[in-house]
Image: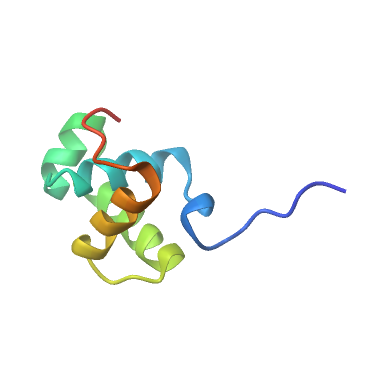
Length: 78
């Protein structure tokens, strides 16, 4: 039987969501994050909504805390 995939918490974030989370935690705006990742700002917003739901948080400050807690520092590169 395959391992269960969690739909909440840090481990549930997809690679794309992790890239967005790291850049936003570094202080980038949605538009700047989109530029770095070559995606649309709308896609960044969608990823953030999914991240916030999975982590049960409501903002960028809480997201930054999660990144610091789970990665031991801010990741400048995604």
